[in-house]
Image 1 (cartoon, rainbow, N blue to C red):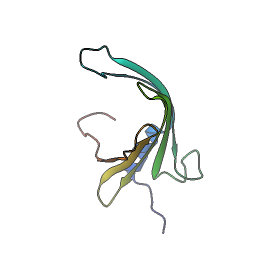
Image 2 (cartoon, rainbow, N blue to C red):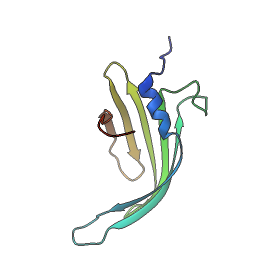
Image 3 (cartoon, rainbow, N blue to C red):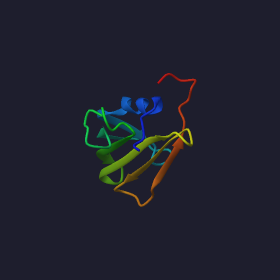
Image 4 (spheres, rainbow, N blue to C red):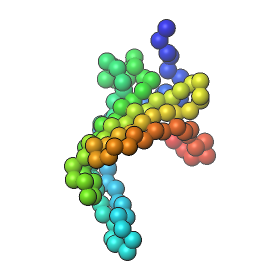
Length: 112
């Protein structure tokens, strides 16, 4: 029997779309921050681009420039586990071998 989306899955839909970003990172002490830019496309996992049928997981694919690494590609998964009552996900980047794992919840004190 397929899983049914819950209200926590609906929150994930706020992330769906085309995004641009600009980051500023301190690479070394006493050096000015380095800026990077890129884009990210967030979509639902499944056949429905509108997310009307498959709303349990979102996938985010990023493209951009990273200081010291050049052009990079990133991929993030994000979903909600009703049994654990936690948001779960992963993140990988073409510039590293580490698989980041996400496990968390929304901050109820901050607006979404």
